[in-house]
Amino acid sequence: MNKSQSSRKTNLFMVLGGIFLTNAILAEIIGVKIFSGEKTLGFQPVNWTFFGEFVLDFNLTAGAIIWPVVFITTDIINEYFGKKGVRKISFLTAGLIAYAFLVIMVVTRLVPADFWLDVNSETPTGGSFDINYAFNTIFRQGGGIIIGSLTAFLLGQLIDVYVFQKLRAVTGEKMIWLRATGSTFVSQFIDSFVVLGIAFYIFGNWSLSQIIAVGIMNYIYKFTVAIVLTPLLYVGHGMIDKYLGKELAEEMITEASKDRSFI
Image 1 (cartoon, rainbow, N blue to C red):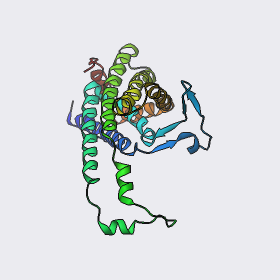
Image 2: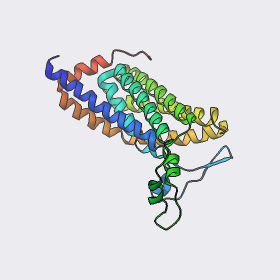
Image 3: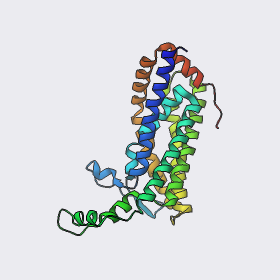
Image 4: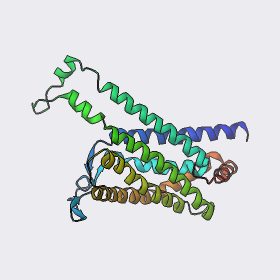
């Protein structure tokens, strides 16, 4: 590999890693907001009943909006850099997410300045407003949610890369859609239930049936969006092949497919 090829390979990993890191960290931070998918699109809530006990709609965390970008980026990194590339960026991201939560924990405990409270003491309609309480409520997350999110994230990434490479061994260079959606199908099933189980069953007070009900709803969304966005995987693949050049791209893909171990 000459200097130019090495530079292109490094640049590619930096760009993909930057996209992965940014979206994963943002998804964790903005995930505290729960939005109605139906009302956002102008529909009435579906009011589905699970287990004859829980009425559920497509109420999702705001982080779900950009998680599909993480799915696609994971598959592209997997395609060109293999298990080592995904593992490297996943552990780095987990560390930075933990760092972000640590910083948030510290700043939410800082004593607010009096003038900051005063100039933000009213809403536009004249009602009273506590901006420090709002700031802390928005940014601060419980320990159970943080532990659940990080555990589910790492486990989901490891499973995704393992299934992706196993499917690639069967499909070869063809059928990118199959290994991308197949790995997402398995990894996001685990991710959807692990994060809820740890955050709200082990550390919270949800029942097992509620965990299953909400997990099913989250999984339906994640997998559906992953299928819808599959064409973007092909677009990205084509752009990268053009940037790297056919020879280097094929060399990287071949090298990436060799390691099929789980860890």
